[in-house]
Amino acid sequence: MYAIVKIGSKQFKVKEGSEIICDRVNSEPGAELTIDHVLMVSDAEKIVLGDELAKYKVLAQVIEHLKGDKILVFKYKPKKGYRRLHGHRQALSKLKITAIKKAGEKGKKSSKAKEGMAVSGGEK
Image 1 (tube, rainbow, N blue to C red):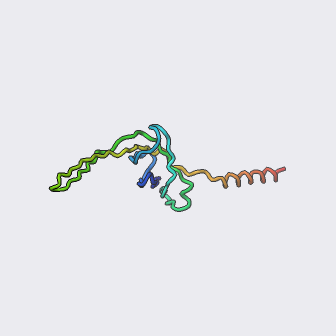
Image 2: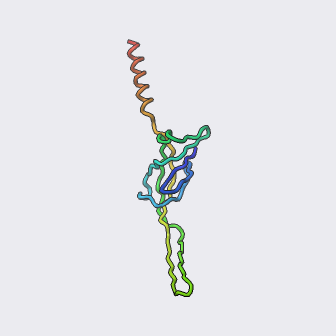
Image 3: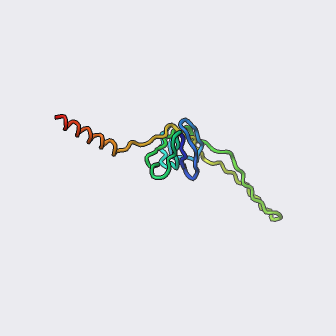
């Protein structure tokens, strides 16, 4: 089973147990996250899209915060004496996907409870 989720402005294909590196999230290392923005879920039998995705949640754990590779930005204008060197390191988080879950439906539980009441009432 795998899912495609959106974290920040990027999309990731995740499985249970996989690790991803995404933009920094506001959680401490070791904290559990719930990724609500699920775009697609697939298991061996079917692919789930559309309104049914509201039932699915992806759980992840923050492993660590880190920085990406340094990117150098060099601006230069010939014959003008203009040179600017600027560096950047992106703040990143490493996440481990712990579970892809489908939330329980309340409608089924209440209908089973009503059926149980009808059966017990008929036996008297």
